[in-house]
Image (cartoon, rainbow, N blue to C red; front, side, top):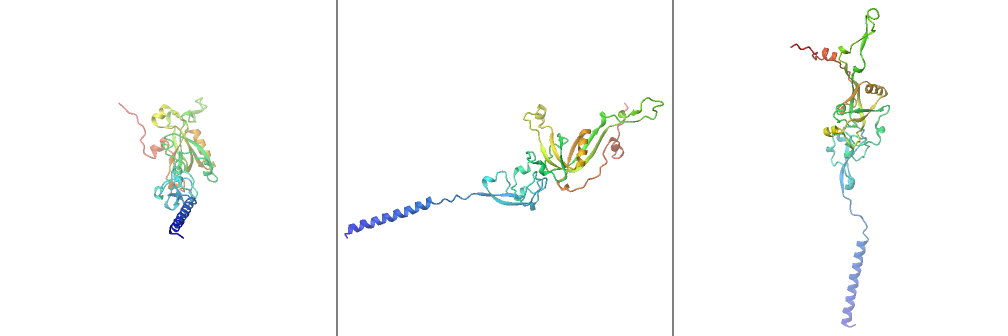
Length: 276
């Protein structure tokens, strides 16, 4: 074979080899269908079932990896949540988010948060009665009744009736302070909170940033239902907040307060006439 033909043949073989390698390279690129790795971030999760109103401790919290798109509103370190009170029940493995600590958000199923044997009763609260609107789902509260019997006259039997007086009763309203305050129900849980939905507050509300009344749903026993409902009809109902550590505390006896107890027991000075 002539030298020139041999050179041409070798050159052709080299070109074929280069083409074959190129085809393999292109095929390997086109055949790689694996998706790019998903970036993850550490998020805080509940390590056990956490009831509504629980103050979180370190042993209730852990971390897991989640894709970044699924991590909106989450927390990255358990230290961020230790000591906070959860406003919704959470099951083990639940990823904790901002909404779990937002008591103002609507709750889809308040009934499921009411314990066995308890009932949910609605109590309307204004800024003062509701501790400045600071009460949230999960909080423990006491229910207080303030009553004044101005519309219900207080009377005693007339000892002179019927011989010397035509009135069987003597009215005492002009001689009495009719205000009475009593803690009626202790250590019940707020399981829901309904805030006004009106988008057009009054001028007074807008000026004071006051949303008006909120409705607290309290989990109470049937006997407590009767007490709270009677109190709503008889006077003004308010709530006072308790420590989250009081969840198992028993009732504390109280005396109730009238003007007489303030003066005789607590040393409040009675009003005295002032002489010029």
